[in-house]
Amino acid sequence: MKKMKFGISTIGLAIGMATAGLSFSAAAGGPTLTEQEFEKANLMYFQRCAGCHGVLRKGATGKNLEPKSMLKKGQARLEKIISYGTEGGMNNFDDIFSKEEIADLATYIQMEPPVPPEMSLEQMRSHTKEYIAPKDYPTKPLHGRNWKNFFVVIERDAGKAAIIDGDTKEVITHINTGYAVHVIKGTEKHKKDTAKDIGRFWYTIGRDGKVNKIDLWQTPDKMLVAETKMAYDARDIAVSGDGKYVIAGGYWPAHFVIMDAVTLNPLKVVTTRGYNTKGEYVKEARVAAVYTSPNESEFTVAVKETGQMLQVDYSDLDNLTITSIASSEFLHDGFYDPTGRYFQIAANASNKMVVVDTKTGKLEAQIDVDSLPHPGPGANWIDEKCGPVGGTTHLGTGLVSVWGNDPIGHKDQAWKLCYEVETDGAGAFIRTHETSDYVWADQLKHPEPEVQQSVQVFDKKTREIVKTIRVTEEEGKAALHMEFNKDGSEVWVSVWNRSDNKNPTGEIVVYDAKTLKEIKRIKGLTTPTGKFNVYNRMNHKT
Image (cartoon, helix red, strand yellow):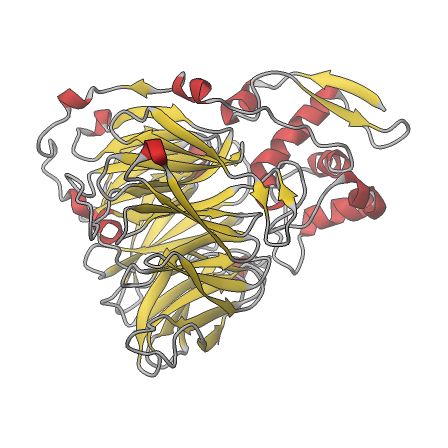
C-alpha cells in the first residue's frame, strides 16, 4: 500500500473535519489522486455526501461506498451516478460539480476513507465564547417588534442565520453562525418544567458542530450572545424544558453533548457507539436527531445506525439516567403527536415510522410506509374519518403517508395507515397549521427542475391535491421547506440555490394560506433552507 499525507485546507478546518493532517492509502496501480485533488474531493464528500453515506462510507440513508464495492462499479459508472443521481432518491450533482470534480470524487470513493480525529470535553470547552455576559441581558425586548412572529431562517451556504420580522417581512439581521447550519431550535412550552422567557433564546447547530446562542430581545447587532463547538460534524440540537440545558448530537465523533444553556459551556459528553438491533457493533453511530419531550424532563435522542431511541433524563446530570429503546435502522428525524406523549420518527432505511411512548419508555409501534420516509419537522392534523393523524413525505418516492396517532380517542385507527396521497415527486418536508384546511409538501428530491421547483397542497377533508404551485422557474433553484406564520394566515416557502456558484442567492416566497396566492417575495437571502416561526415552535404548533 502506498501512503501519502496531506494537510487540511483553511476551509477544511472551518468545517471541522480535522485539527491535523490525515493520511490516505491507495493500492499500487489503483485509482490515485494528487494530494491537492484528494483534499478537495475529501471536502466535497464531507459537504455533499457524508450526511447520507457516512464519514467512513459504510452507508445509512445512502448506500455503502467503501472501496471494495466502488472498485467493482468502476470510474465511468460512478461518474454517471454522481452526475445524474438515482431513482432511489440520490440527487443529481451535474449542476453542482464540474466534470473534473465529479471525476475526482468518483476516484476518491474508490480509495480508503480518512478517519477524522476524536474530540475531548476539554477541546469543546476551548471553543466556548460569551459575547454578552448573562448579567447584561436585557429584561425586556429592546427593539419594539412583535418578536413572537419572527422567523429564524437558516442561510445555509452563507454560514448565517437571518432574523425576519413576520409582520413587516423585513430582514432584520444576518447572524454569523457555523458552516451549513442544519437546525435552529428555541425554548418551548413544557408540561413539567417552566423555562423563563419561553421562545426568547434560539440555538443553532451547524455541519461543523458549532453551536450559537441567539437572543431575540437584543438589538439586531447584538443578537449573537455565545458560541461553542461540540463535534466536527453534527445535525441537531434541543433545549431542556426548564431552559437550563442544551443538548446537541454529533455525527462525528459519535456522541451527544449536554451544555449549560446560559453560557454554552459543555458539561457532559456521552458516546453513542454500540450495538445495532442485529447485534453488530457500530463505531459511526451518529446522532440523527435530538428533541425535548414536551411532558417529561427528558431529551429524546435518535441514534441513526443502531436504531436505538434514547430517553435521557436531564434532572440529574451527575447521575445521568438513559433508557434505550430498540427500534429500526436508520433513524432520521421526527416529531411528537399533539399530546406530546408519543414521538414519531422515520427509520428510513427500514421504510418505517417508529413510535415511542415517552411516558412508559417503550416502543409503541412501527408503521410500514414507503421508500425512505422523511417528515422533517412533521405535521399533525385532524382527519374526519381517522381522527388525529400524522404524516410524512418520502425521499424515495412521490408519496405522503398518513397514519392515525390517537390511541386514546381513536384506538382502532391508531398507528395504522389512514390514507396516502400521491405527489409528483419525492420530497423532504411536510407542514400544516391547526387553522389551515391544507397540508403542504415539497418535492425537493425529484430530478426534474419543474417538479423540484414546485410544492403541492392537498385538502385535509377531500384528501386530494388542490394546487401545484411553481415557486420558482429560475435555473438551478429548488423549492423546499414550508412554515406558517403565527396565526396560520401565511405560508413561507424557501427558494434554494442548488448550484455552487460564487454568488449563491435565494429568497422566501410568502403565500396566502387560504387562497394559495402569492403575497410577497423576500429577497436578500443566501440559500435559505429551514425557517422557524417563534410562536409556532414555542407552542408546538404543527
